[in-house]
Image (cartoon, rainbow over all chains, first blue to last red):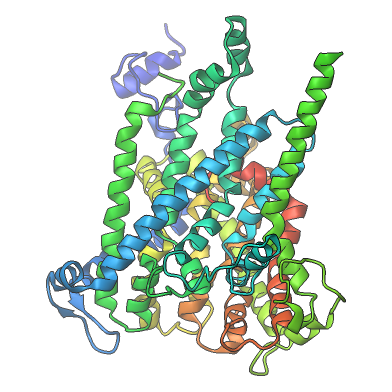
Length: 325
Length: 282
């Protein structure tokens, strides 16, 4: 007589899979519930806002923009199918496109590492500090909070302006100022510095990652005679690699998508030396109304970002160390 | 006591360097505030000095007059409206969606979760153009709808944040409620919602300052100056070609950052915890 089958047996009945071989679900929980506790109706009821929103504001627009990229459309009439012409035009004839690509790669390629290196360095230092850590953390995070705003961009323009504070400081030391924003060679660097200045958010993430490293690792290695430098390379860095990976991907995407700094601080000048890609796309769409072409520009950037993200992920196998393998 | 002295010296050096570094990092912001109190003609004379010769508070009054006859009262009101409505919508519906992912077992849950994570990485600029065309077709250009409506369908980052939080609530509570006769819907309202208030607060704060700072959406969707939020108005107000009153310009710029800074200092723990646990955006 079996008044009550135990749960394992019941699950085996339901799913036909013996215990021990049952997969864990995506949230890392063992599938303990019997299948008939599924509430599809309820699930989709609560999920519905997201479903509607995603379909309407994300999926459909993405597909629509793909279609648009193969058309010539100026908002006034109807989209005219022109096949790959936009893409051909872009890569063969469009000097601004190429310039904006160069500028954006230069920007992302320098600003993102700058931010990440700063963030990691300061996080490492702050992690060792005991007094007033909270205060430093808050104050150093502040630029990150306000940095993306229009207000700061406007201020930044004046900061590096011909009579701005930077030149004024240089003058006081006896050095001559420079037309930072007027010189095509230096203008982009003011934007790079602006981006690096906002390292606070990445710093917080690194700090959290550092705090997750068990101190027992350091203690054990100290017993074995490890010096701080060795500890850094053998413990800290490897344990931080997942966080570094995460930060790198998110910051790279952000870097490629930058718009406000270029729009407000420099307006792409001088001579397009700060024409960030999204600014160029914005102009095509909202100043020239070449919607089809702008959509094609958007897709090219999307593909580039996807490739970079995939590459970073693929490479992660070689340098990212997870604790649970 | 040589070791102790050495240690204290090290600490002093450490803190001095940190303080100097922090001061340098904060200089731009402080400079902006200082310039806002300077006489207009003095702003760019020895501009690196922070303290003004005399504190010209009237810069703020003059700047407040705005431009084209529209004062910053209108602009701040607009910003407040857009930000508040967006925030309320986003936290309510993000919580609803988070509940479905974390507490309800339904077919296709995994797929939708993956979709949500992917959406989180998708930048707005990618869908900006088709969305604009769609809203144009709907006749919603120059209204607040394109700015506010998308929040009412859940914001992936908030959904994720609240999900993580719900996972810390023991399922025994749900089960106990069920035994007492609650169904899935009432569990949400009676058990989960009261317990996720901290997460919702964190989401609200993030939402506030993302919406407040949002520049691109108002830029492309709004055409009537009376409807402009502070971010957009500020850009027009500060066009270097047309500025005559630099003091006033700095004043308004400083003022536009004030709400964010104040909220940040009051609620910083929520923000710092929120970022640390979910590790995204900033």
